[in-house]
Structure formats: structure tokens, C-alpha cells
Image 1 (cartoon, rainbow, N blue to C red):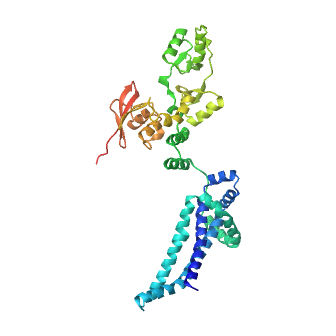
Image 2: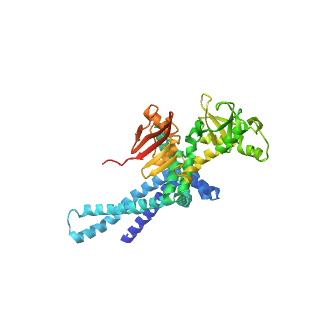
Image 3: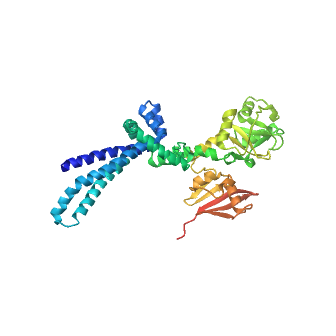
Length: 432
């Protein structure tokens, strides 16, 4: 057989090996979600790929049988066919030295191995990784034919491998469940690739935060609630509405912990515009208030609003004391704040490149986002930055008390009675 014929045989083996290498990577790397989308669009090849992925042992067995058989055959043919040609070349260059035969064998071995590594392994696998779903749908039909042709061998080797894995208590099927961490990784990759805009990326991240953030992180605190009482007269009601133009006002019986309901400003305004006098809150359109515990997450709060068709709720702690109020707008603001107000301008004020003034009631998640901090110490024990300070200091803080978190210094600068009103956060320069 001529030298050209030998090269053609090796080339054919390389092409066949490359096909199986490509099939192996493409069928393994093809993403189930994208295949399901293609299946729903009516592509039958996507259905075949999904079915083959359900039993990966079948095509993996075929691939390994083919690759190993071709590698052995290529090595045998390559050594037998190419060694004489290398020997002739080296004899013409170096004469009849005793080491020529060994060098010829090593040269043919290195040449054939390099061809298989480059053309039958690395290049096909890299191409398959670029678009695994598209390649998988291209190779799935011939792969299914191979599975049928090699069925006896597939049954034998697949059965033996499953028996060994089962005896070792190892899984034989892959887990296709998608976790939130994987979704985060995909979203981050999309943002880095420029597929997602910064605003879209922030909003998707905020959606996941609804599951981890509880209602106290977005509510209006107890001491900032403006409420009406059953004992208020018209003048008092008018004064409160004029001083604090909210859309809804909590109504209580004497004190804030005795909640009766709430009234809407538009109902009061309607009475005023139509010259309808009222002397007490009871004469207004009093509505029942939705009451929820402070342990609810923002996601659960959103479901509560949806189920009750309300957009205003009173939050109670375990002692049935009012700790705050929350509206639908507060929950939606959590979704939108990273997109519309990057630093929550009302609570986080950036003084310069390395310092911030932060309201003590600011949610710790918003602080982490503004300062680009991955996580805070003991983060499960508090909701706000004031709670963080109290947790870390193990006391009621006073002015000038501070806590260090990495390069950031959190210092109390203002106290309102026992409540932390404001903190100064400074990013310190790293010492050499």
C-alpha cells in the first residue's frame, strides 16, 4: 500500500473518531432548557436528543467503544504503515545507525498520536462546545443508528458499569434540577457577555432577593408611622394630612398597637371638596387592614397582596405589637431600586468616592449592594444596618462606636434616644 493510501486510511479513522468525540461533548453539554424550547417550536431532533439524554449510558457506551477501537486500530496501522517511511528517511539522513529503527517507531507513534489528539479530539470537542444544542441535533440521528448497531455490546458494557456504580452507591442518572445559584450564574454570564443590560441584571437579582428578604427590610418603621385615632377631631385629621400627605393612614384606638383599620386620603379629600363636615374618623370610609407577621418574606407578602387584593398591610411581631406598615409600592420598590435608585438616595447618600452617610433603618441588602460587599458577618441575625451594629457591638451603640468589615469602617454619628439614626461608612485605603 502506497504512502498516500496509508494516510487516507488514517484520515478516515480520524474523521470517524472526530465524529464520536463531537457527539460525546455535544450530547452531554446540550442544555435541557434550550432543547425543550426547540422541541416546543416543533423540531423533532430536539425530542430525540432529550430522549437520548434520559439514558446517557447508551450513547456514552457507544462512544467509548468506538473511540477506543479506533485509537487502537489507528495506532496499529500507523505504526506498521508509517514506520518504514520514517526509517527510509532517517537512513538517508544518518546512514545505518542502530538507533534508526527505534527513532522511526517513535516518530510514527508521535505523528499518529498528534494527528488524533489535534484533529480527532481537541478540535471537534471545541467546535461542539461552541453550539452544543445545534451540533447535538445534527449528530443525534446517526448516533441513534450506532446505538442500535452496537446494542448487544451497549447492553453488556452498560449493564456492567451500572452494576458497579450501584454497588458503590453512586448515581447512574444525572440530576437536571436547576438551582437558584445556577440561574444566578447564567444571569451573571449573560450580563458579562452583554446580552443583559445592567438594569435587567439588577432587576433579576432583586427578584431572587424577595425570597430571602423579610418584610421588616422594606417596611415603614413603627416610629415613622403617622396614624389617626378614633379620638381625633376634624382639625387634627386635617393637620396630619396636610403635614404628612400619604395616600393611606392607619387608624388606631388611642395608641398604635390597637389597630382598627385604615382610611384613604382620597375619601377624606372627597368630603372636604364637597363640603361634607366630619367630626370623627368613624364618619369616614374605614377599611379593614391586612395584618401580617414580621416573619414573612417579601415574596410571601406579594402573594398576600395578590390573594387579598389589598396593597396596604400592618406588620406585627410575636408579641402582637405593631412594628411597621408595608405597601405594595414598598415591595415593588425592592424590585426597582437597583434599576432606578442605585444608592437609595433617601437612605444612602454618597459623600465622595470612599464615604457614605447611611440611615440606620436601611436594609442590610441595600447597604451591601451600594458598597459592593458580598456578605456581612452574622447576616442572619438582623435586617437593617442598625441591627448589624448592635449585633457586632453586643450593646446599645453610642456616637463614635465603630465596626470594621474588611476595608470599610462603619461609625455611628447620630443617635435618636436609643435608635441609631445615621452612620458614616468610610472605605479605608489598604496599607502596604
